[in-house]
Length: 178
Image (cartoon, rainbow, N blue to C red; front, side, top):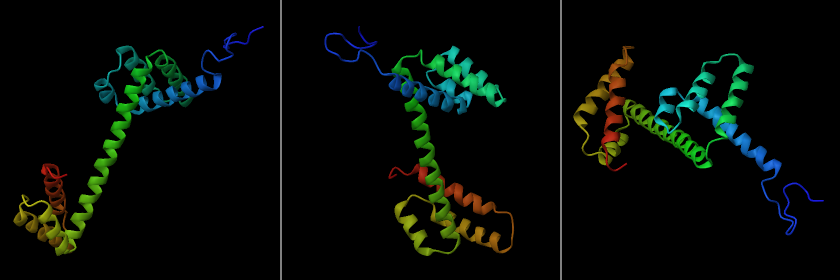
């Protein structure tokens, strides 16, 4: 009598174990959940079939928790029919987006910290910034710093404060050194 999935001659397993199949199915379910969270406009830029977009879009519209869970499982079932290479490509695109967003958020925090240092009167921070970005308009930046300091002391709307952030961000984006 032979066991299911075992080669009679060598005794090796012929296919994946049930545990491996379960882990793979759970990984696809997690991918489906991540894709349902992505806006439809972003999904349309990815190499996703129209049929799959329809399943995902329907799942996004459902508000009842148990119905959404059931539809998510159906989406995952449909995804398991796709090639493993396609699923890997979708995972890579979603992971790339996460890393890209993290970099942008970190850059925004660095620029905000620099702006706060400049408004606090840190001359060394301005010197370091101008040394790193010599193409920046130092006169305009200094004027924005003075205006932001004035707005802060007089409790005025932070127009220069925001404009200083925009200018610093644009200088960072234009820089080939980054």
